[in-house]
Amino acid sequence: MEFQRTHAWPTTEAEALAVQEQLRPLVRAVPLPRTPRLIAGLDVAYAGAHGSADDAVAAAVVVLDAATLEPVEQATSVGTAGFPYVPGLFAFRELPVLLRALEQLMIAPDVLLCDGQGLAHPRRFGLACHLGVLTGVPTLGVAKTPLLGEWDEPGSERGATSDVRDGDEIVARVLRTQTGVRPVTVSVGHLIDLDDATEVVLNAASRYRLPETTRLADRLCRSVLGAV
Image 1 (tube, rainbow, N blue to C red):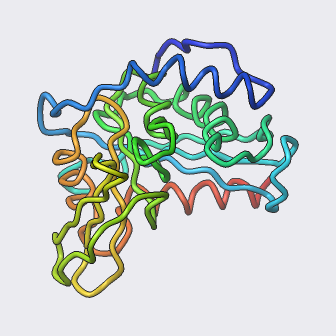
Image 2: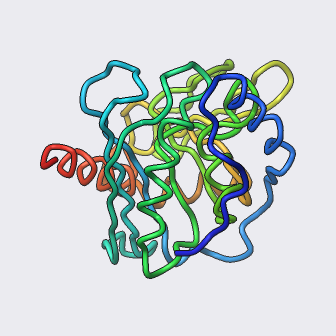
């Protein structure tokens, strides 16, 4: 998979904030041009939870057939975080190793599903937005809980939703993927709108609370990190 990186990688908090400020206007929330055939889940595992730039990390990307949810390709990468943990700048710890994993793919997914946030971010530029802008691929965030905002509890049935608002702005949607289980949070990353992002996540979560993209990528990056 080929893409162009659009900025030098920051080493300080001030530089990272400047990158977010520079790239945020490039985000576009638009409907998908067609029904996706291939969807990819991305996740990162850490050795320890120290929040240091030296933390060992492993990234995984798993590409699935969107109709059958069967894996068709996967790739991994290992390294160090390269950036300390700073609230709101989490992407700078994960993106370098995720990009290296994506570069190994022989096929290009139609949508990327990140384990994280997109527009549901204090500066409206979470991991999913950043990854989408760098790759030019429709990208969404699917997280276990909202990062910010207010929402009502959705209905208990599969497919029930409730919008997440931060002030007057809708920044995400909580989605009940299975009847009676806790909802997940879906947010726009880039080149997809919230309705399409919600549909992609629901279709990918046919059996469990989390979509298969997240489940398989999480399992793979943890196994790779354990083998390092």
